[in-house]
Length: 298
Image (cartoon, rainbow, N blue to C red; front, side):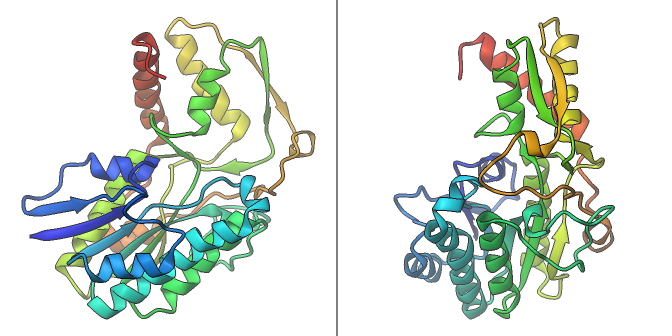
């Protein structure tokens, strides 16, 4: 029996991982927070050592970017110390660790997509805490893949797509047009992580290190919102006027990278995993969300 530990089961990527079809003989262990508290590194290490796991997919994280600015300790416990504990245990047990990270480890000043070799320079607490987790894993000596991704959306959890649909009844919306990134479907991240971890389980010499996975085309938040509302309009729904504004007109506690597009060539070369076709995934997600609205599901 292959036992795979998946953290963050209530989140977008974790729930998508739990919903995938896995090979026969695979048991998924997706503990609730009451059983595995990611803010308690000692509990994390003990849980892994006593679980008889074949691999770990670390998709749980502290993702409240703005809240993290005033909650530094919790953010670093969950995003820095928990991955360190996973990595230490994975090294001892000689099992692979696949860890989901973020585009926010970059400062956003680069022109063009970021490669894995580009230096990290997080601009806020969230990005810094995720960078700390990355460094802990990289220096632990465990077999690992750190999978950086960006602008995650799905029909579950909180995300930009759900927010835009919720606000669609307004006459107009102002959306930032000078931040660029690559929207990525949680379901596609899950499939990528699954393919990686299964290969890592089967082959101890499988590629290891940092990889990028995201949507196939970069877009601004304004452009992303416009795509969402075009889908709503095509389905006969009224949509707001979407007005572009600069970041300076929409201040937030945490600084966001102006450009966080990611280069995914390395993942394609080493694992044969191609970028997410985010527009097709967005259309499917919108259909699911509108269907839930019709049924009265929030």
